[in-house]
Image (cartoon, rainbow, N blue to C red; front, side, top):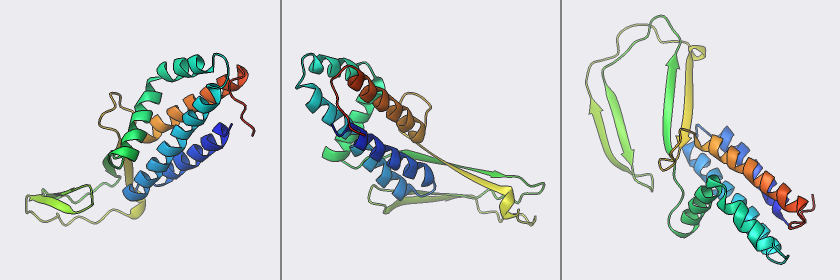
Length: 184
């Protein structure tokens, strides 16, 4: 009965995740909220479908035939019952300039789940060469978040978008077969 409301809520949090790629903390908060909203779609559907002849079988078939549904169900369950959901992150920096100053120094900082610095390693010590700094419009930074336990190469935003598409199809199928009565 409330499935479409939760679909719209999940859409909202997917949009928020997409706009917060460069803010890991906000991204993970929005991911957590997305997981809860998306899971509610299935929970409401199950409760409603069970009350109709053949509804439980329809529900089970739909849920079990979509690998993303199981993957995200497990993510949400872990997020609620075990530990906050996490995602690995990568940052790609592209500099479009003819002369770029480089250093052979790199600092890697490792944080624990609470955000505390656990370890920090700096390699190399040479200073940056004396070439001019590129202008801001010559530097592009891209952030990508992904689940380490997902077998494919899709990032979190792509996967959650695909999952949301599956949920919409799931609800539409339930409506067309009379198992779900979702008001707009």
